[in-house]
Image (cartoon, rainbow, N blue to C red; front, side):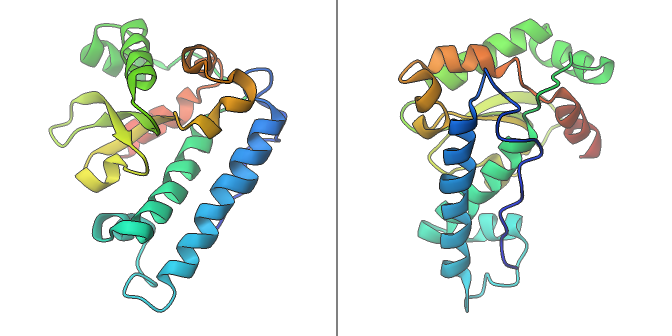
Length: 193
């Protein structure tokens, strides 16, 4: 199955001032696009060519895994953002309270995990195999899909995600991340799986 570069679910300037049009142009239009193009070149004519993306992530390694996983991670990340962020709904709020004590405690845990991720990677809110909610960090292209956890929310903490807007200030990027979280998408992920 060929990967595609889906259009952003909002205009490139829609997330400003928290994420600039320039960042989205480079991040989506160059980085994400390159992962998709490279993944398609690598899987062409292989056993992975006709598999669903999540199955390729589970079965592959090396360059194929890195590019397919990064394409999937980025597609998921764009859906986690919105220019019209609203507070978490009741069901999601209760789930976060149960898992972390409060929505604010969840945000604090997630922010610390994202800021403390060494080098390049991702912070995730996931539902674990036992149904509990956890915050995890993955390095480079790794993704909870590979370990059987269900992703609910992610934040890209590779420098290309924030350097144009925040330079080396990852904590400031995370502070502003909460202004553009698509809680409706997170709730849909919680309900759907």
